[in-house]
Length: 248
Image 1: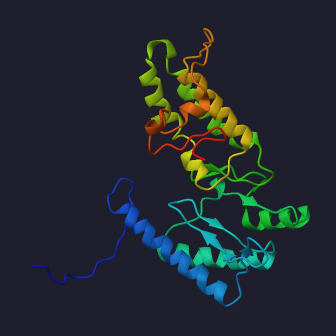
Image 2: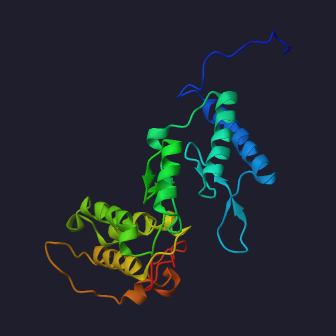
């Protein structure tokens, strides 16, 4: 039978590799979320809006990659710093400033941005890079925005020898690997037509056995290939590739 034991004072922080670390870390970040919600409700923290009538957005937490949103002013910087200091005192966790960046919208003047960056002691950036494996979009979406996705497709194809694979093998790889590569990105982003057409082109060439060594004739029309197997095509039930784009 379990029972109450004497109270104890923990002297060590979260240890990487411990099975309880993810749960304890989540509980700590939940406390930070509560702190932010309180100051948002009393008006001290002014979150941003995605649109004029959209919901207010003050923070986004996933694992150890939190993003904080607020008005670009020194008063807001003081409020955010106070919340982080309160959280740090309670949990023992601190912001890693060398790994952090501050991003400003185009409406923020360079003077204000420089002042905020100096107060926070966190460098400015014009590109937040990737978040949860997906590029953070700042400007107009183009083919260059998803160049990493194209590189992954190219990397997969470069490791496969078309000449040594049968038609059935190429179809299986295309359906299970190539078609699934853009699936994660397409859950939150709409791929430009140029990117979808490029990936489709690579899949068509791979299935037909085209490689750098030489070209082959397409024996079957692509529209026919994209039909379900029940209609004489090669598409699996869970696969939704068509002429306009992968997984459309």
